[in-house]
Image (tube, rainbow, N blue to C red; front, side, top):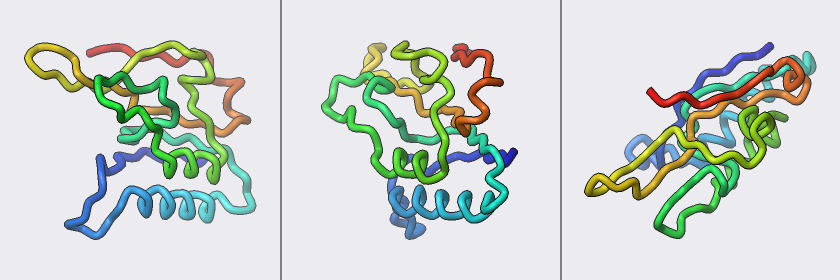
Length: 130
């Protein structure tokens, strides 16, 4: 199993010359290269600072569009969202932004991605609030 733990940049990091589009493309290329012909199962865990489905964000703003580059990364590496696979359309979030004690934004950016061949051994996927 190829295990990758990441903290993805929360936005374009112009000061270090890294755009999110470049980050996800480069990471996808690197994982694909490392896994190579072995076709080892892949497990990616961490703070993606992105979400693959509109259901994973709650906002008063019109910014519910998933990050295309993150979806492309998932497709190129051949992984799926374990939480979404096990919980269907359940809405839970791992990141909250508040304003005047009111939640104005919430998203599920902490994610576990697995190769399809690992899905049968994933028994459950839950979010527990600290």
